Image 1 (cartoon, rainbow, N blue to C red):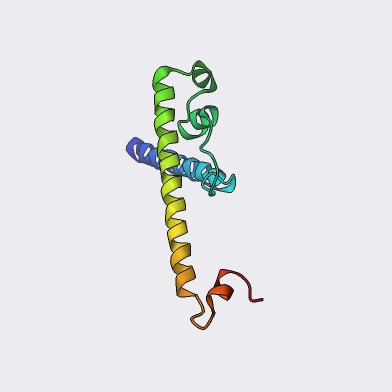
Image 2: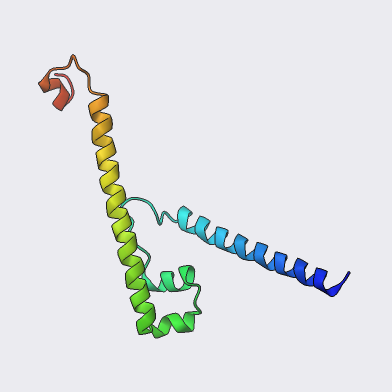
Length: 114
């Protein structure tokens, strides 16, 4: 094999391993319930090591730029969660209205029939 062919194969292998590592990281976050409703965003240390993939020594330093980046991440996650929760409430209210029994009285709609 020519050297350029070996280099191409090596590059493809590195890219494939990188993609697998990223996919595994996202799966771990999903299994941990990171995106579950009511789940707080990751703490700084987990964000630094798991999302940013920085070495632990740098995460321990808590550089100003890293802390600012984390705060932006946290703000974005919280805003996303609030929007998701509001959308879920609206969808539930809409579904409840669609599934309402038109023959029920006001008393039985508010709770179980008595």
